Amino acid sequence: MKQRAGGNDISEQVTAEEIQSLARELQMLRNQIQTISSQYSEYGITVEELSKQDPERPVYRSLGNILLEVEDRDSLESELKEAQEALNEHLAKLIEREESIRKKYEEMVESFERA
Image 1: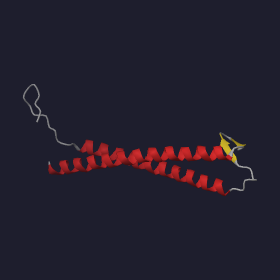
Image 2 (image 1 turned 135 degrees about the vertical axis):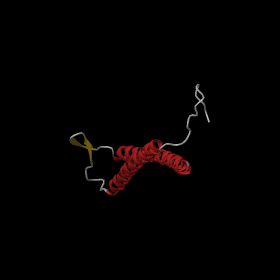
Image 3 (image 1 turned 180 degrees about the vertical axis):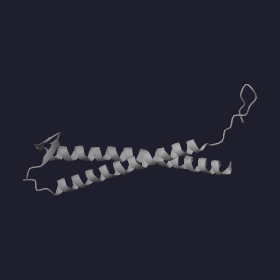
Image 4 (image 1 turned 90 degrees about the horizontal axis):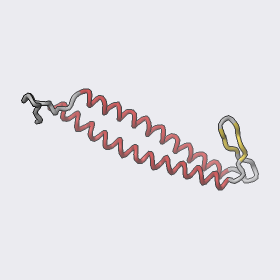
């Protein structure tokens, strides 16, 4: 244990507030993971539907409040796949962070219960 200048011990025990803070962070990460997962799936569905679309029919892209006809479908498909891959990479990092924080949370709860 550490000591203050006056000789009093500083508690190094886990507090309920620290556990609650980690629980809030875990919940926030879970929400982000769910949101990113949904976006990833939407991109996948969009790419799949684009590939099924008759090449003779026009395809439109939303830009703000207007729809613009897409002239280069290959470019659009490439952009969609790149965006999906970026979401996948971000999702992997969030999941890794969630696992790390969950482990820390479990260790803190265990430490708190022993105290």
